[in-house]
Length: 67
Image (cartoon, rainbow, N blue to C red; front, top):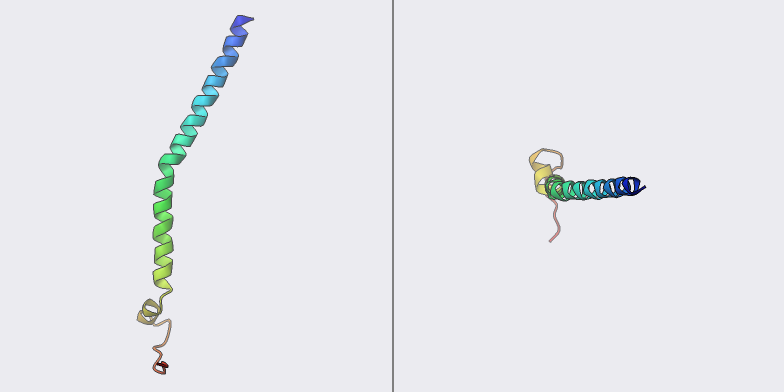
């Protein structure tokens, strides 16, 4: 009976180590994913600017600007 109880404790310890490993892996991975998403978002924002759109000929130069 004591051995069965010890086996349950070992399983719980293994589960705890597994959860800690998953969280640690995600925490290590999260900064890299955040950096990649930030780069993609910034590139999209830059692409959407009028200046870049005109450089690529996707938006005509507006000569009738009101001031």
